[in-house]
Length: 157
Image 1: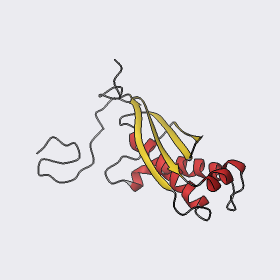
Image 2: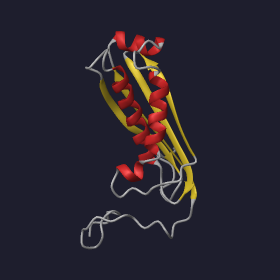
Image 3: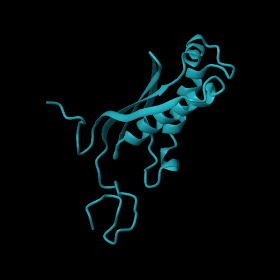
Image 4: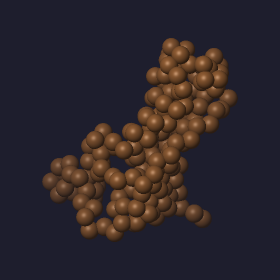
């Protein structure tokens, strides 16, 4: 058909067969941002959000989400992750979440890192929406990935 890996010769959706691939170390890093009012940001920073510790809840939610990607996104493999870590950085008008996922396996962990980041950001929204319903989640993107046939991205010069 078109050379797309998730389509068979007839154009039907399929899960890619990774059975013949060699397991290699693989890592992916993704990031995203949530912007909010100064009041909401201050409450999160000060631990004064009525629902509790926003950062702790967002970290756990992101890790849990990474472990469920195979159940959430059609045609993604369920992976035995070795590690998922999520870091948060306070910025001028919001918070940045950055997730790193890794394993030794036959397929990459980009979707796990992206999903962990997005769910961490959605959890921040849920925890702080009483303070600011106008928060905006954006700039979700893959920062880097290593391992597999395609190697490093972005490529080193």
